[in-house]
Length: 155
Image (cartoon, rainbow, N blue to C red; front, side):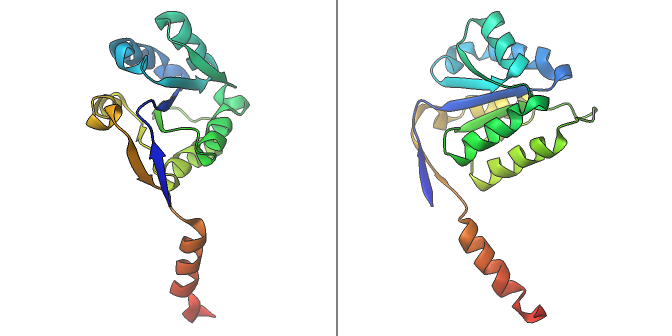
């Protein structure tokens, strides 16, 4: 299935506690480009971005309180075009299942996902930031049917 991503994209901004300074720094560097799009984010990250950069950010709950799950739901509803998620690779997160679900859904719904500054910078500088883009959403029914055929010999 195809889904059109418009020129004005809806970008989710998420950062774990030890990565919030990195996120704020990256947003400041890319403020001019980000201002052209619709921004949303989880809890404290969204609040800090708005307060420290002046950009308008739609706020969801904090990650541990369900914010990552809210972003995941928005992905499945086709309301998120990309996610910039600066996760802390050295800290365990109490809401790890929600984080993994968000990552899995980003793959399933074919949205760009940056987990570090370099990837985020490559995405934001991409020619696709200034144009429509057709993304391919995996068809879960088709995938299930293919897997059933693949393992039919086990019956």
